[in-house]
Length: 124
Image (cartoon, rainbow, N blue to C red):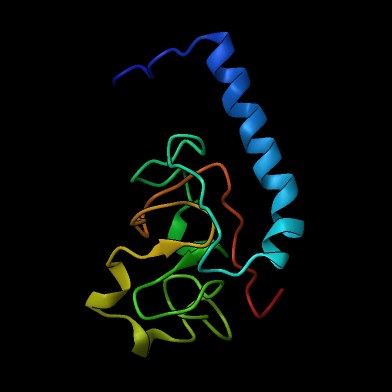
């Protein structure tokens, strides 16, 4: 198993401060800023990885926008009742890279970052 690269205390403080500022100001600034002009956060700042962290993955995050879909609906486009309510929508499109409301660039539905926030199921 490969060990993670160590970062300096100064770099860690800068990344942490930038993340805290981004996360705490987003609801206020994001609501006032048009989506097309909003600056997204760099993948490195949010520790994006192209594989899941346990059961947490971008495709199941409220910020993930699947190809041809809308944010907040997860990989399956809003699963509906129960975990498999929308199985007829599953197909090759489901696993294609999408985008994120907060993070720049193409995002794998199997990826993960520290801004992960799970989609709430209809049952909850």
